[in-house]
Image (cartoon, rainbow, N blue to C red; front, top):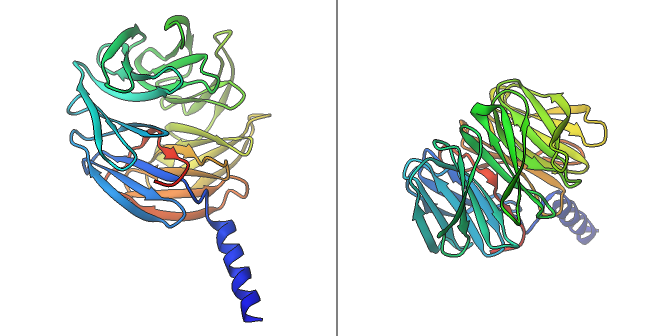
Length: 312
């Protein structure tokens, strides 16, 4: 009987553990560090010193990229924290997106209305793209066809052909777009911090197909379980939108000043970091219940895609 109870408890624990192999690489701006957290155990595996107040982050198999706006530095690490390359850029680097298929890294320049295109191995500059004023978030579409930037002070997004690096569209969205991400079905979702809504964009046609009210000061967007999850900075919540209807189905309370948000590799959970609380919150993507809250370094931002499936 005791053995059956123990087996049942083990099964429940396994079911409750979100994406057992997922690791969060959380840029901590105030602490000048990157927290590496195993989601299943809730333990901080390591903390890497990253000078220059890191904010932007992108991860993929074998690489972790961090952007430090204060020192204008972009760094490439391996998943264990070994520095593999770095470059200082003359401008205001902030957002980052990785096109792993083409070996390219995109970095937005807040001060000069441009995107740097870097070789993802040695971080040498390959090209520069022109976009609108104060570009922040960047995203590459799941099929690799598009790269998009949120041009905050222009109230627009710029959409480029990712292969040819050619401008396709400039699309007017809500007020002060900051974070954005492509949904699994290819639509582009844009969080507008000034108008408290999300613009849904058809990237091929270059037009807004819907505008959806969310919480106050929406910052980042992630997708799981046929839903969009939007972190609302000023409200300490995450808005949950049904992808089919775009109706808001819930708002989940999280920590203070939620910013970076991402989905686990298996789509079972959403992870959001809370800048003022120095915590990370894990949300069950189906039940919308909060599963765990974990400590991070000081001032977590994790602006970009920061979750990596598989052990390190």
